[in-house]
Length: 427
Ligand code: CMC
Image (cartoon, rainbow, N blue to C red; front, side, top):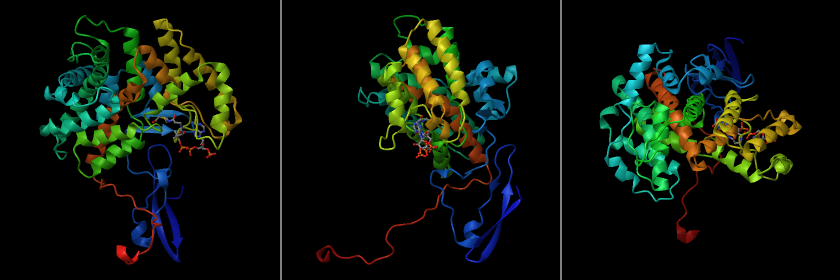
């Protein structure tokens, strides 16, 4: 592509540089556009707009490729661990053995919550959605950890990042325990990050909890697959909240709120609910027809993606993991048969082919999480837990970026032009 782009508005010409990244599409640098032309660009949903520079994650949506700091997600899911991927995202390079041990130790030292936070939980209704609890408790962390809220101090930023990664499993497990009326379990730091989370969730004080290596490995894989994903809605929310100088705990709470929506993190819950509603493979054609009907708002949940116009590479890993986990646990869930059949039918259907709709990460994750024993309301919580490392890495990257400014999109105003106020007696 040319290294500048010329634009003419109202007979006035201006020129804009074209910037290239390591890989991926070039971007037209329009920062001077308004000054030069008095015009804004219009891009609802930011489908054509790069909001920042980032060295964290890269997606090639047409090829179905996802890289974390350059490493393909399938290699990380098969060969790495969530702690190692967390280190990679935060620091840019894979750790040496010592660096990984030190990082894992540091995270394990931050797993406990301030004891008073347990009281905070009791303020929620028993039937509160765990995501509502997550938004509240994570936002409240800023009221408990004042010593790591100075965003201009890189050391405090790193402590806050470690705290968030370390405490999220404890917070998530407590949200679950609260909803089922069981006592909270304290973290046990001789267990791995993921085994510790499973114990705090499914263990009880009355007996020892033996983490099943098959489940620990599947859960760790799910955490890796959700760790980061470019400038998606919740990550952009975290960056936007952080751009005003808000503290990291408040920013991550904002990200959790955004993730909750059914078009984003809530889709795994919606996908499993949909598969259960379909029930048996013979009812699939009815749902395919509904998804294609313009007058029906129904969409195939777990299908389609803003960026992937090919298989979501995360769905490929999870499709395989779903079979492994269910086989190893000896679970025969008709939902998995329905999912496989639905995938095959949709992939051959012209509507889905034309619109490039493929299974996304949420299509199979619900099947695995349900087999492990999580209620559907916990699915998005697990997504939030895993995505926290991506959010904090992106937030740190933004704060350290000298080009960072407060996020402030413009608009195309289509309300009334200026008019005079009319007193109520004359209306
Ligand atoms: N089922 C049926 N039709 C669909 C679907 C679907 N799942 N997704 C998109 N379409 C159609 C849509 O109706 C539209 O058709 P038309 O051009 O005729 O109006 C076309 O495909 C493009 O849809 P869009 O909504 O403009 O595409 P988008 O890029 O804005 O939306 C999406 C992406 C993920 C919101 C959407 O595909 C969707 O709602 N999928 C279901 C929800 C879901 O699984 N979300 C999880 C996303 S992955 C997790 C994450 O990374 O957060």
